[in-house]
Image (cartoon, rainbow over all chains, first blue to last red; front, side, top):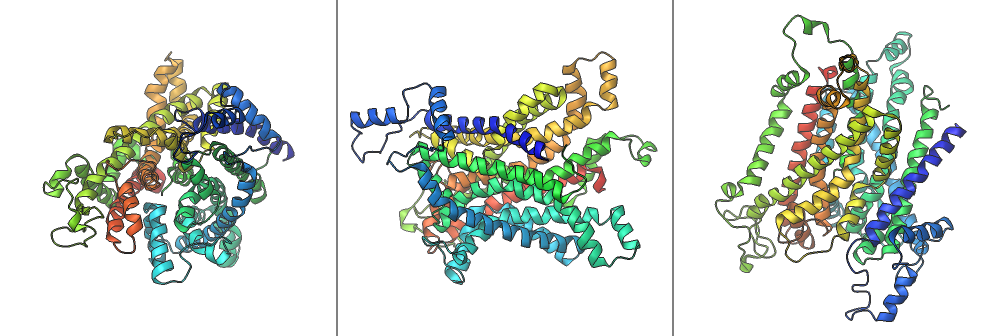
Length: 308
Length: 322
């Protein structure tokens, strides 16, 4: 287990370097003047441009630039934005909000998605099964931003059950509606995945054995079938975390949440290169670590899986 | 947005098992009648599937909108607008109402299909070709080739589709003379660059399962070159999961295009697409919800029909479900 974790962590290094390099190259090396609109309507003074070019090492070749950036990153220095704020303080300010949003979304996904999947699998071909299959298919087909507008319009404005936008404090109550929107797509996938796995496992030999040795139906399903069906669902939720953080860009935009997605979107539009690279690096790191965690959790859930 | 990568993860566990079954012997009843190939078997299965017929009819309509939009709009031009009619609701002359500039929403919705369908088809083709090629090479040759290609795949896989799409598209310098094909090409490139990795993973795992099958060993013993084995034996026998995932992804790419256009980064205004229409409608959602409603419905139905098609194809190609 320990050796497996270390090997996986070592394998992550080239992936992190490669990913951040691609992002760095896309942000800094592609054509386009990074100083457009930085100084209001006037073109930027030459002294400012010279200072900024030196600060962001723009006169070096791309690999050298990236090397310098990586060296700073290893020392925990994410650099500064054009306005002089450290990127790290911007991330630290925005991250808790998005993390809370993603966490609520994952809880919604797990609780509702898995229950719906179990309900459908136990009533295969029945009313609930068909209802869940059709409704998840509809949710999968409607893009998240349309779901977001519909939810905001219906529950935020017409029915006024939830606040339509989120204030600066981003309380749990305010985040429930956006979290539902963010979770909707994955929730549908989780429900379908759970239904498929459980329906297949209910026909498995070990379930028949458990039933024939006299266990109650509740115990057969709860202890044996559901637990075995959870394994692919856990992988999916782990892999989905990245999509959730990416999808937060849209959800945060609609509900005016000042989180990492909003920060990223704003930085891309205003060409704050350092902030973009910093935020994406953090997101990719989180994504890779969550996936590693899921793989390690595998061993805990499924005793058949052993790491050498 | 329906994320194609998410659908891949959901589809993977089932599609992989198709191969293990086919690797073993055929079911006994198959030997009594004339043997059919997997593909003709799947085609027979498909023709009797209600979901397949429904999605095929819907996709047929979207194809008509793509190639012959004037058939459905009675010759109206999507760029002929009358400001006097701004934001008027649906009526018998304009079924879907008028948008902010007084353009007919129905006509624009029909014309909007073209950009979305083109992006979906070309992005899928791009991802399938690149991803399939890399997957075949990695799976067939294994060893260090596989290690290197898998790490490269991991690097791109680490960037979420939407995030990467925003990055790629915002790095493109904006041009003033945007035409349909350059705009579509830009979005296809952005989605394809980030989308191929999931195809690679599917193709690689399915090639690995076929690689050591008896017919491959037999072909090699007969002196076939690697190139010939890949073309004649490995690819035809490992293509099924890729086709299923590609069909489902097509819907996902249409959704992704709309999301990017909605963010103002995908297709740009002179080009009509459902995403740009929804983006235009967004500020007026309270006074003129129909402006957002109709393109959103068309978009969702288009995504839905490709996902349903993918589901039907998967059921037809998976003998276990019969």
